[in-house]
Length: 70
Image 1 (tube, one colour):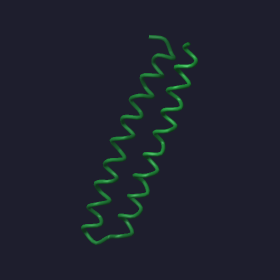
Image 2 (cartoon, helix red, strand yellow; image 1 turned 90 degrees about the vertical axis):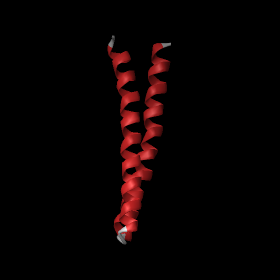
Image 3 (cartoon, rainbow, N blue to C red; image 1 turned 180 degrees about the vertical axis):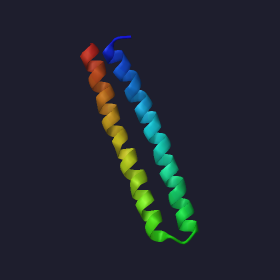
Image 4 (tube, rainbow, N blue to C red; image 1 turned 180 degrees about the horizontal axis):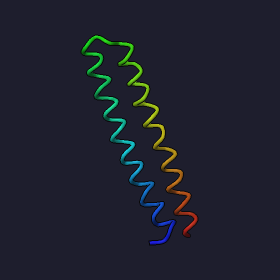
């Protein structure tokens, strides 16, 4: 596996891992809300949304590698 193939694999894995983290933040935001800690819930919800936005950057990087390989 060359370096670009390795990086492409890593980017897909990092995006997947990022999704997992985002869902964890969302789950804990809901739990914090249930426990009555609105401020914490809002911060965790922001973390969820910001983490999901990062997926766009992972997609850009994956596309850039595919263009490079063409």
